Amino acid sequence: MAAMSTRKFLTLNSLSSSPLKQSLLFLSSLNYSTKSSAFGARKKNTATEKLSDIDDSAENDSVPTSGISRPLSEILKELNKKVPDTLVSQRVDNGFSLKYVPWHIVNRIMNLHAPEWSGEVRNITYSPDGKSVSVVYRVTLYGTDAELHRESTGTAASDETGFGDPLQKAEAMAFRRACARFGLGLHLYHEDMC
Image (cartoon, rainbow, N blue to C red; front, side, top):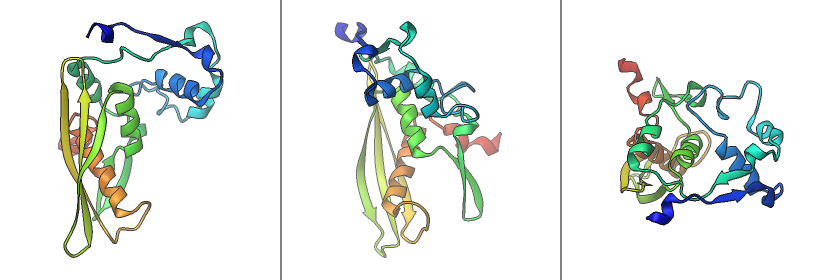
């Protein structure tokens, strides 16, 4: 446990201009809960412009690469923050307008606030008539004090049109819902009640 509390730093100058360096700089600059976040700053700076503007100055030389574990309470506190509206998408399903956070944004938020998380497909079930597929997905958070997992399901119809096959859609839905059970984007499920 003592090894987890010490922080080791990776010198970014030693990475030259590798994709790893750009990814580390990008992730270290994220703070999705503010209006000036990398995700929300689509008005003037795209993520690639932000990466190209970063120089090798002294303030950007080090990015923590270990010792990033935190207690579960701190991780859950971060995940329970409201996701900015700029990251929320909307779709119409059976005549109802639904707000959701796309799976790739959920993935980035999880990487930012709970970098030691893991996810796995636990079960795939096709309906007897072949008209739908359901996926059970488990997300596990690892804190310094404990680990915690949540599971959820997602179902997609075989005849749905749009991007991706039904299995991909069901998995993405199950993943988002499992993360919502930790609080990530949960406010979208009860927004209409307020």
